[in-house]
Length: 220
Image (tube, rainbow, N blue to C red; front, top):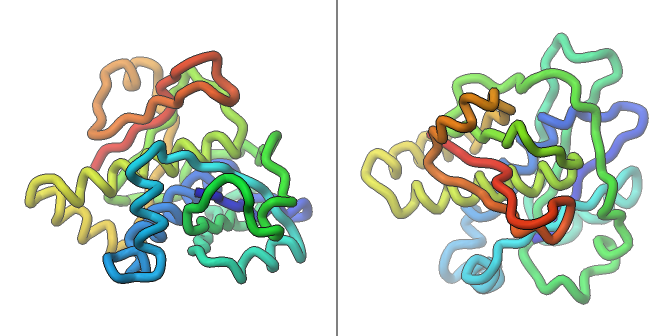
C-alpha cells in the first residue's frame, strides 16, 4: 500500500498530525464500501492483506500532490490545534489501493520515499478517540516510517475489532462513526514496558532498523 503525504514547505504539518492522518487514511480505505466483497477494490486489498502488509510512504507537494488525487484511494486531513506554532499547516495523507511495488503509476513512482521528516512539534490534539496508538519511546524513526507504523497499528486494530468480541465490534462501530480518529502518543518507557495494548507491530527491519523491532501498538 502506497501512502502519499503532503509536504508543504511554507506551512509544514506536525509529525504527530501526519501519523494520525496516515492511520485514519489506511483504515478509511480498508473500511470503504469499495473494499467490501463485490466492490472494485476488494480483490486487490484481499490479496495484499493475505500477505505481508507492507506500506511505503512518499511525499508530494504542489501539482504532484494534486496529480495523485486522481488515483484510487482515500485522502484524510488532520488539523493542528489552535495553539500550534505559527505557520503550522494541516497534515494530509492519501492511501492508495494496494498494488505490486513495480510498476507503479507514474504519478506515484516519481515521488520521493527516503528522508521524509516533519517537525516533531507538540503532542496530539486528539481527545476522546476510540483508538490510541503508542509509538515505542526507544525507537528513532523518520516521519515517513512512523506514519507507516501507525498505519500498521490502525489496520491491526481494525482487523481485531472486526473479528473480536461483541464489545470489540461495538467499539468498531463507534470508531467508524467517529471517522476513525486516533490519538498517537509516545508513552514513557515504564508505560511501554507495562505492555498495555491489544495489538502490536513488529517491523521486520528492512529499513531504518537493524533487525526486527517493536515500533507501535494500539489499544481501545
